[in-house]
Image (cartoon, rainbow, N blue to C red; front, side, top):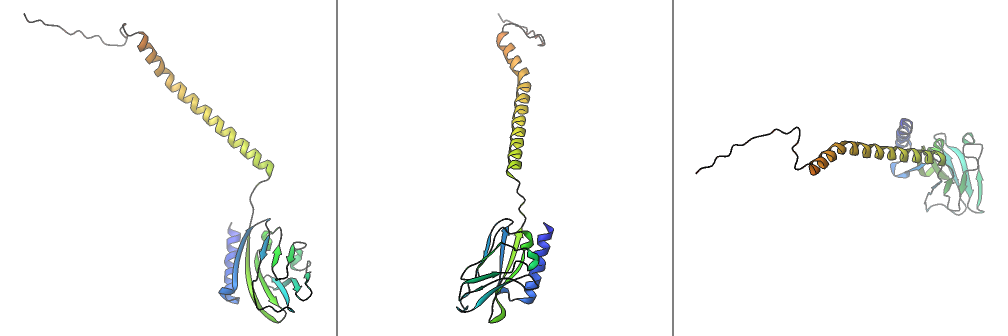
Length: 194
C-alpha cells in the first residue's frame, strides 16, 4: 500500500517538473487487466511515425508508421517487461494487456517530427489481492459454517434461558388451586359490624 502511494507521489513530482499539467492524464487499473492509452491528438500527419516511450529514461517501446500501418514493438527494451503484451492501432493508441505493477510509470507519445511529447500518461497499476477460485470457495464454506454455528449457539442459549420460565408458567397453570410452597400465607381478619 505504501509503495504505490510513494511511487505515485514521486511520479507526480516528476511530472510537475518536466511536463505541463494539462498534458498529463492519470490512468489507474488493476493488475491483470488490459489498458488502452489513447492520445486523441489531431495534429498527427498521415506520414508521421507515432512512438511510445516508457519511464523517466524515455525508453522506446513501440512505434507505428501510419503511412503503411506497420507496427514495431521493442520487446527487448525496458528489461523485456512488455514482451508480447503491446498493441498499436492506426490512431496511435497503445494497448497493454495483462498489466503488472511493474508497468506503472510515465508513458509518452511522440512523433518523428518532434521530440516534445504530444501527450503524457501516468499509469498506476494496483495489485490484485483477490484469491483463486478454490480459495474463494473455501472462504465461503468457512464463513457459512461459522454462521451456522453462531445460529445454533444462539438458539441453544435462548432455549436454556426460557426453559425455567416455561416450567414456572406451566406449574402455575396446573396448580392454581394449590398454594405455592414458597408463598407466604397471610391471614386477614374479617370484622363484621352488627
